[in-house]
Image (cartoon, rainbow, N blue to C red; front, top):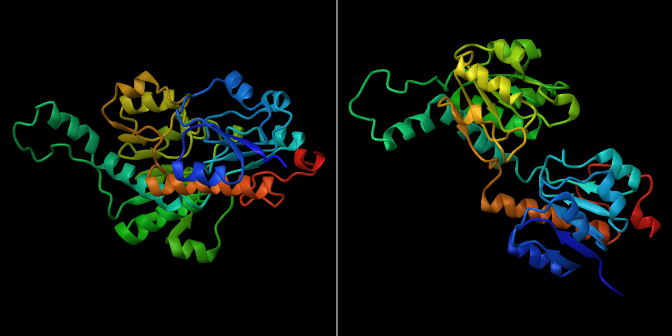
Length: 331
């Protein structure tokens, strides 16, 4: 009996490729070529499953072109590259990779907050350019982190982990806004206070965005929201591109409507709006919040575990949709 066929759409940890080869006939893109949608559809012909990395769009057109495809396992906690409704209608299972990246991503979010508040990137560029000639009392004077107010928009696992770092590690006052309020027990663990979105914007010294991207969340933070923030505030986005209106943010940073921003995600990435690139008061990183070797390996392994379970006739480990019918059962 032939084994199921899967495609690994981008390069992943070789150890995980080896694990998958024990279960499947594997086609792997270890050359890490970014395929166009048409090229991806071509390579998915005859495939039962695909391991995606977040940049491969799975939509109705691709599903119609790949009738054998049964499962798409995303190596990311976010899955805005999935048209979940189209996948569900087509009977295709989707999965993601939550939990395994929570602490690593929270570490990076806090590192980005620190770098932004304390003007680390800006001062390093100044030093490397040979401009440091003497000491001044206000040389790259930044914003306080300890004892300041940390605002978090989106209080899932990562938001809670950032809150704990701020409250317990830096004595910050933590306020948050979320679609639903946390339990009293979780609020106490995070030392966090639930507030309205408007109060969050107006009181936060450092605002961290950790909410998932949905069409409804597009430009959740735009010109009006930024104008509601303190002129001394910083804005940190480790959520998804499109949560922030990058054009409005660039204008606000240029006019000092807010003091600074730290961005790991962008609209239309890997392209970054040129107005952001021209500013000195923004720290820019290339979507690397979960990028440690151990975490990226764990993310790939969880995607692999979902493929192994589902194509082996079991329930997926971390599903993102519930199927009333599936291509697997129909086959």
